[in-house]
Image (cartoon, rainbow, N blue to C red; front, side, top):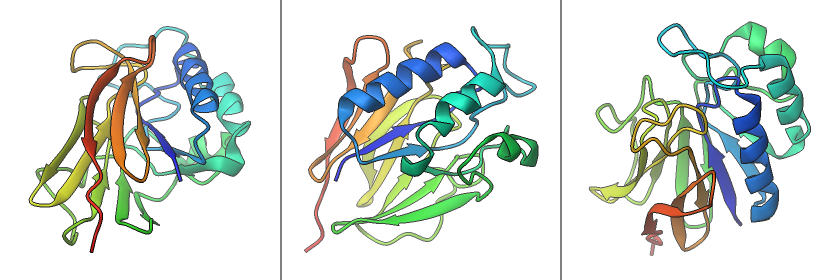
Length: 185
């Protein structure tokens, strides 16, 4: 199974379209969206190509493949535009080798971990900074932001396979950070 992970689209239609093109090319089984999908939020500048309605329409094309959680900029009004659920603040995905806890990152994050066991993973966004690393046998994974990156100014997305997790640049698909998946015994 291959999972494609994106976060912090913030209503940018060009960034969403680029992300969806990468999703298509990846042949991933599911598109995991870690929140802040349609609105830019009060602390962010309005992103290039800001068009929440068209962004929702583009995402709805893939509604049967989406697993999403709510970000701090998402609201019930956003849910009215989307054909997949986004109102849960977290979700669990069970893989044969590990449990993934999906969240936006404004509540649960590396500084405030939810209850996890050895071998589990926390997938989060919010910080707009790409991360793929283990801390005390817990995988911490953040795909960065498709729209307002803060790490080195490069928009990014993530991939998780049975053996590896990666964060790649949205523009030229360059590998930013990766780490192996540690299988449970």
